[in-house]
Image 1 (tube, rainbow, N blue to C red):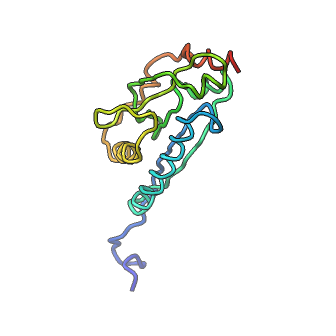
Image 2: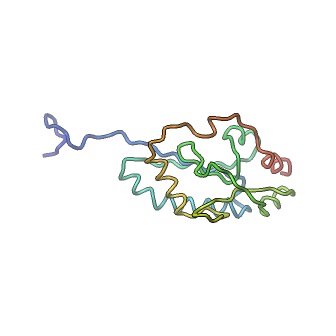
Length: 167
């Protein structure tokens, strides 16, 4: 007899599944080594964590968005490339950048791209474990504050302006 049969109190009630939305925002996946590496690291992290999340009642939705214009930058409040957000929150809200030769080659100017801080070390590509921890932290956090992007007026960063002006 199924514990959820009619007339029997249900110990395994069907709960509504929750969604974890992961957004990957980037400038280029053909030349930029940071964007290409972050994409690969994100794919590996999602592969590792998605089974656990599914078992815990979460569906994982991944949106990969190539920011190809100033209009898209404004729409997504794009601050630095590459960016990973989980449920609307940047996994590293304290943006750090350094010169990105790949993007500089793309636009013919000097452009800075994001660097990731993990365990006190700067990385040009976020380590898989950094992304996994960020996803789990967001999913299991009881912090209900809105994202940093919701709290301030958005302006296209000079760096992104330079990139699009050169393209």
